[in-house]
Amino acid sequence: MLSAVMKPLLSPSPSLFRLPPLSSFSSSLSLFFPFHSPHPFTPLRSSRRNYTRRHASLSDHHLSCSVPEKPLRVAVLLSGGVDSSVALRLLHAAGHSCTAFYLKIWFQEGFDNFWNQCPWEDDLKYAKHVCEQVDVPLEVVHLTDEYWERVVSYIIEEYRCGRTPNPDVLCNTRIKFGAFMDAISDMEYDYIASGHYAKVVHPPAGPSVLELSQDMVKDQTYFLSHLSQTQLKRLLFPLGCVKKEEVRKLATEFDLPNKDRKDSQGICFLGKIKFSDFVGRHIGEKEGIILEAETGDFLGNHRGFWFYTIGQRQGLRLPGGPWYVVEKDTKNNVVFVSRDYYSIDKRRRVFRVGSLRWLSGKPLDNVRQLRCKVRHGPGFYSCSFEMEGDVAVVHLEEDDQGLAAGQFAAFYEGTICIGSGVILESWDDQCFPVCEKALQLAAVEDKTKLGKPVKIMTMPVTTSVEAVPGEEKLVTKEMV
Image (cartoon, rainbow, N blue to C red):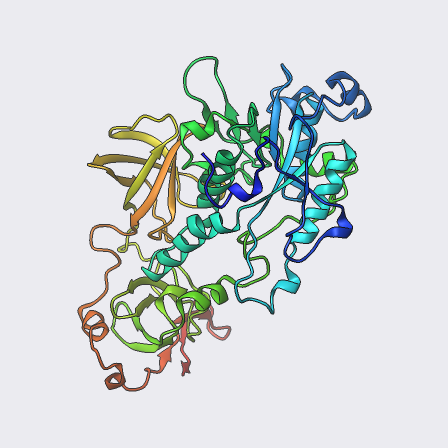
C-alpha cells in the first residue's frame, strides 16, 4: 500500500514519472514528464549470447548472481555510482528487462550554505547517461518525507538519548526495500536489484538466504541483516559474485560514464554536510563536563554528550592522550573518558541485543558457535548467545573496544547471515568501571563549583638511554 507521501508520484496508471532532459533540471526537481507507455516494462534489448560476445570479459562467473536462467522483469535501484551502474549492466547482460529507479531523498531544510555542493544533480546525470547506453528507462521517486519520518527523525532521537544509531541499516530496511518496495508493489516486477555487495539465494522451496559476498572487505550483509524474509525474497544483488576490483574493470569494459568516479562516503542524505553540524542543528549544544573515569578528575568541557560515542577518541581536545570515551551520563550531560581503554581488567565481551529480526522469519533459541559482526567490515567474532525473553545476551570470545548502544550486531552461521538486532548495553554487567568520585561529581548540579580543569600529565613513556645500554628512563611532561 502506498504511503501518502508517495501518492502524488503515481498516476492512476502503473507508471511513475519519466526523468526529464538534462536541460530541464531544476534545484527542486519539481518538473517531470509523465511516462505514458502502456506498460512500465521494456522489452529485452538483446540476447545474453549476443551481449557476452560483445563483451568478451563477461563470464558465467560475473552473471551467476544475476539469475541468467530465465528472463525477468527487474526494478534496479540506480544511484549514479559505479556499483549500481555495473549491477544494472550485469542484469541487462543476463537478458532481463530492467527499469532503473533513482531515489531522491535529499532535503533542504535550512542548510542553504551547503546545498550548492549537493551532488544529487551529478548523480542523476550519471544515472541518466548509464541508462541511455543500453536504452533502459529511468524513473525518479521522491522519498524525502519518508526518509525524514522513518530514518532521520529516528537518528536524531537516538542521539538525543545517548545512543549511536546506524543510518545505513535503517535506510535499507525502511526506505530502499521498505517505502520504495511498497511503492512499486503493484507493478509486477519479479525482483528489485541494487549494487550491494551481498548474495541472495532463492531456493525452490523454503526461505531465501542472505550470504556473504565474494569480496569480504566490501561485503555489505551487515547493512542488510535487519531485513525481513518478505523483503529478502524479492531482492537480487548482482555484485555478490564479483569483487570490487572486477567491478571497476567491468565499468571500464562497459565504458560507463562514471567508470572513474570515486565511491561515495558518508550518510547519503547529508552529502558534504558534517554529521556533527547536522546533529548540532537539530539537537543544539549544551556545555557539559569531561571526567576521567578512574579518578574523577575534571579534565575539560564538551558541547553535548550527543556528539560522542563509546570508543571515540577524536574531537575530545584533551592533551596527554590518547583519550577514549568510555561512558556517558545522559541525565547530567557528562562524558567519562579514559586512557586505560585496553586494560585487561575492563573486559568488553558481553552485551545485550534487542529488536531482533531473523531473516528466516523464525526466532532462534539459545545458540552457540555463531559468528558476529558489531560493525561493517571484514572482521568477525566467534560468539554464543542465550535468550532472555525478547533479548539476546551475547558472549564474544574476544574483547571489543567499540561496542556502542544503538549500533547493530549481525549474526552468521558460516557464510550465511541469519539476522541482527540493536545493541542495548555495551559492557559487561556494570558497564565501564567509573569510580565513585566521578559519579558523585557528575551528579553535582552547579558544575561551576568544580573549579578549573586539572593539569593533565602525560602517560609515562619508556625510552632507551644511550649512555647506559639496557637501562630505561621514564620521561614525563606536564601539559595544560
